[in-house]
Image (cartoon, rainbow, N blue to C red; front, side, top):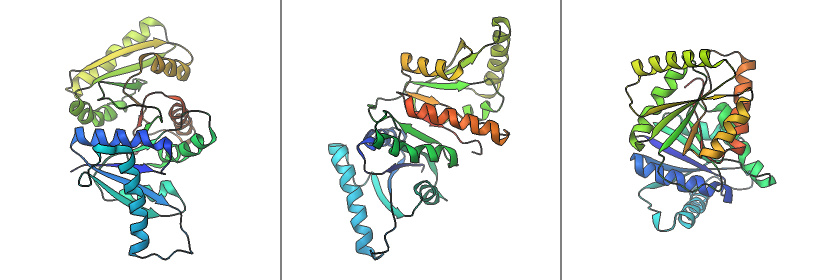
Length: 271
């Protein structure tokens, strides 16, 4: 059975991600693991009582915010210790069949909010698993529309294939959003060529396409997300990029994670 990992620092800004993870795991029929990484403290002994103390803190956090939806047989608390939170999360997921890692996204300009988002941004750059960043004010509803930010690159067919099981389980529409500064005739030609490839390789009927014309790709995508409020936004990294281009793509993804009103899903370049 697939697992969803919800990673938390016990902050208010991770509560929306908890509720999202619980609902998504229920819909998908996945196991849900709530994970907390606590800093190492040489003054405390590593024994069963010490571990139980941190597990109870995590369990109490989940009970408080899930309320009547909390079920001890449905959500498993797990705690690990380490100085680097992102590294410890990834170590924990090793050898597990993980569908995705769900974390709180940074949202406003508050200092605490930025600190919470730091680990999520780090995970986006390091994770070998999909990461879903949930804005702190987001209220869960079953996803019906998934934005896929596309450049019509052939590599994106791989990510679309990886997205299909989630879209099928949710019965969600995938809207492929392409932003271009090319002339309309050339843009239409590129769209038709990509549509043909998708149709031949991905037998999913609920896919639509939207082409927007702009030189400001990031700002146009951000404004479109704010106006249409899709339930999930997918921004994949790309394989076979040099380090400079990959860095630019990751920077855009991290910037979007800090301002998107919709949950942002990222697939790693080496997935």
